[in-house]
Length: 112
Image (tube, rainbow, N blue to C red):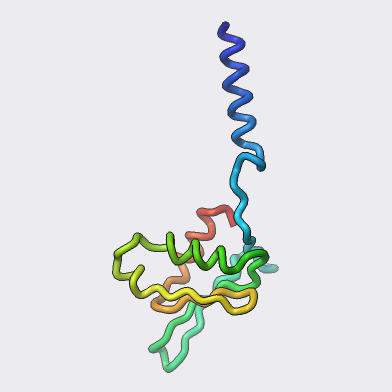
């Protein structure tokens, strides 16, 4: 009895850890040649406008932009109200603040 229960648990764990069981995102952010995430800060208008860019997104850029705008900050916070996410070709442009480190940590938390 114990062995059959153990085997059942092992099979359940193995099936949960297979790639088919995990939901794969519709996008991929590849690291650059130095091994870093392609997240850059662009300062414009003598420092009054800060843009954060995620470059070279493979797959659905719109899906990444939507997920980023919904989950980067807690809904209702000051940062969430200031956050503006746009797509431009295979890039994402984030306006509203100096959030490069938050974006990098968000991407790392999702396995990129």
